[in-house]
Length: 168
Image (cartoon, rainbow, N blue to C red):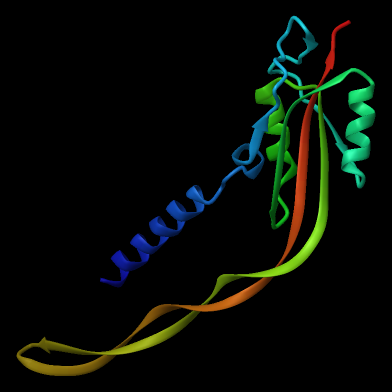
């Protein structure tokens, strides 16, 4: 019985972990109004990777790029715990952009529900009949307990602008 419970617990945890890998850059992505394609901008092919540029002054640096004939293909703005930069690069590759301008500014500390796992031992009575003689004993089985608590996490305002150079 415990073997089945452990097996299904592992399957459930793997299923939840697979669903939890969301890309917030893609989820909050909003395309710009300008139509951008290979004829009016320098796009990369799927084998290339966009150049990632980190900045503290997002709007100022974005203006510098747009003044230098770069086109904003789209933006992604959200507040959350730090998101992996590789997810922005992955979205940039899908959009075929040449540059990804990124910014992450600390906003506040939030809390989320988390779990600590502990193993306890449960003792169960065992009755056996050996050669017609009833024998009473005890068996110790592991029991896993999830203890909920609130974990403090930093929340950042994260911005990404996906850029390509305009053809002249």
